[in-house]
Structures are given as C-alpha cells and as structure tokens.
Amino acid sequence: MSLLEKRYRYVLRLLPPSYRAEREEEMVSAFLEGAGHLAGADDARPRWSEVASVAALSLRVRLGGIGAAPRFLAWGEAVRLVAVLGLAFQSAMSCVWFGDFLERYAFFGVLPTAHQQALTAAGSPDRLWDIVHGFGALLWVAAFAALVRGRPRTAKALASLAVVSVYSDHLKMWTVDPGQAVSAMVVQTLLFAFPVLALFAGFHRDAPVARRPLWVAALPVVAGVPLYALLGLLGTKALARSIDLRVWAWVWPWMDLPGVACLALLVACVARIGVHALVPARRSPGPPMALALLVVPVTLGVLARINLDGVDAVSRTMAAVNAAQIAALLLCGVTLTVLALLTLPPSPHPQAGRSPSPS
Image (cartoon, rainbow, N blue to C red):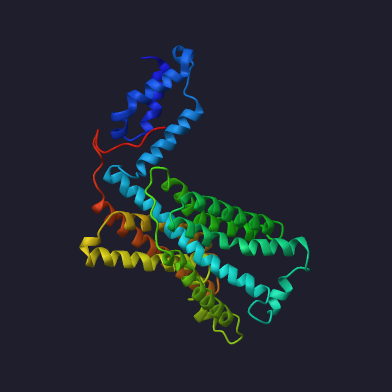
C-alpha cells in the first residue's frame, strides 16, 4: 500500500463506518486513478478539493435523506426542522422590523418625533439605503415561503441575501457606534446564522422536498403582525413617564430579540415535552433534537445580552431574569436531548441502507 493510498484511507475516515464498508475500495481506486503518476510519490497528498468533497459527502450522509439509514434520516430531519423553525422566527421578526420601517415613514399616520429626527434628507444616499434595507427585511419572509413550498434552492439564495442585508446594516452602524454594532452582530449571528447554516447543510440534493400548503407559508406573517402590535404597545408603555421601573425590569428582558426568541423557544419546548408525555404515538427523535439544537444559539444570545455589572435594583432584576431564562433554556435543552436519545434509532451496521452517491 502506497503512502498516498494510506492518506486517502485516512481522509475517508470522515465517512460513517457503514458507508466506508460499502464504498471505500471504490472511492480509493477512483482517487488513485485520478492521481495518475503521482500515486507512487513519497510526498503525494490528497488534493484539498478531494478532502473538501469527502467532508461534504460525510455531512450529506450523516444528515441523511431519501433511502438513508433511520439514524441518519433522524439527524437530517432534525437539522431541516431547525432551518424551518429558524426561518419562521426570522420571518415573524422581519414583520416587526418592516412595521417599524413603515411607521418611520408615517405609513400608519402622524410621524412620531423620534422617527422624524432619525430620518435623513429626502433623496440622500442614507435615505435610499434606509428604504432598501427596510424592504430587505421581507427577504426572510420570502425565504421561508420558498422553503415550505418545496423550493430549497430559492430559499438558500433569498436567505443569503437577507444575511448580507443584515450584516451590511451592522457595518453601516459600525461608523456611528462600534460597540452597539458588535453587540448586535454577535446576537444576530447566533440567532440568524445558525438556521441558515442548517438550511444549507440539511437541504442537500438527497434530502426529501416537502411542499406544504400556502397557509403554512403565511404563518410567520400571521404571528408577526400581532407581535409588532404587542411590542409597540409595550414600548409605548415603557416610555411613559409614570412607568415603575421596578415592575418593567421584569418585562424588558423579554422584549429584545434574544428575549422574544427565548420565549418562543420555551413555549415550543414545553409543548413538545407535553406531546411526548401525553401522545406516545407521536414520539420521534426529530422534533426534540431540533429544539435542543436551537437551545444552543438562543442561550448564547441571551448570555451575550446579560449585564452582571449593574449596581442598581433595576439592573440586578434584569440580570436575574436573564439568568432565569438561561436556566430554563438549559433545563429544556437537557430534557429534550434525553427524549431524543431515547427515541433515536441505533447506528447503522455495515451494508445497512442505501448510501447516496459520492459524486
């Protein structure tokens, strides 16, 4: 066995044992044939493109699609559900941001003084950018609609444009307030990039494509409109002069982006645990595994916003609420992980299931 062949076999260890048992010899022969006269050289190594292709194939096999082993199929379903749930939340929040954009331009009536001060001169580059970015929030809605209607490639393109829109706004904010830009970038990276990565990883060419009804595509908008009204009402109350800060300190940690994500995820986690306990026929590893995965970015997002340096009563109360949010998320995450592991199919044995093509 040549050194290059040993190195190819080492790279192929990225693949699951069941896949290697079926395809390893075929893949090694193909790699060696592609290497040609370099196969016998002492310093020959696999090309980086070959290593990358094996890594991508390993991910595609482990996040199984049609014909995959049950365990890999369960992991694939979980990651795909992470993408669906994540884009649904982002779409609902984008309705809130789009509502703020419309309010900023007096679409709902008299322009508030705060928004008047924020607007730049008509026809200026900043005004044009604000309008483009305002409508850019709808890219999340379009991406979710494309995904649930069975068009994952379109969803990937739209989600990528939405991410570019978000980060370009952070770069613009950097010139005004670098500290706030970094804080917002960290939180939104945790909450937005995670589902987008799941979208690209889970919806590969072997993944099943589900075409859901139109009313499913409209759900984030149906949820986002009342959410915009509720947050707007709470924001108005929070700015009232008669506000009791000691009372509102318990409410504010639930009103920002990590707080809303935390509340939505906790409701979903409790509902899933209830379904698992009360409806045995609906027990499956995918949903609890997906929610447990989502606990990670949401917990980190809340952690990024917690302020432990406050000395006044209001700051300490808000920090306590954030700590309670983190504790509740971790408890739900551990519980759902256990439920997922209890229902997860065993690892496939060699020769089990139909493996996707390495091409």
